[in-house]
Amino acid sequence: MPQLKAAYQYIKVSKKKHIRNQDVKNEIKTLVKQFTTLVASKDFENAKKTFSILVKKINKAKSKGIIHKKAASRKISRLAIKAAKFK
Image (cartoon, rainbow, N blue to C red):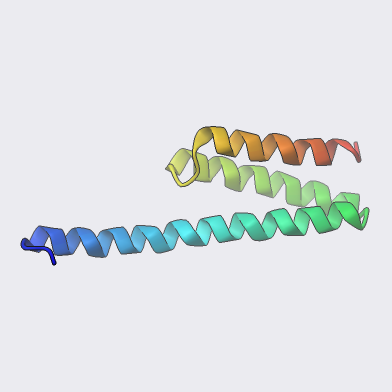
C-alpha cells in the first residue's frame, strides 16, 4: 500500500483516467461495429455519417493520448478502405 498521501491521490486520479479512457475506447469500438454492419447492409448514407463521426472520435482519442497515433492512423486507413467501396 502507498505510504504517502500524494500516492493515494494519484491512485484516485489514475482510476478516474482509466475509466474515462475505457469509455472512449468502448465508444470507438461500438462505432466501428456499427459502421461495419452499415457497410455490410449497404446503407451507404448512414455509413458515411458514421465514418465521419468515427474518424473525428479516433483523432480526438489520438490527440488525448488514449490511442497511440500509429494505431489510430491504422484504424482510420482500414476503415477508409471499407468506406472507399461505396464512393
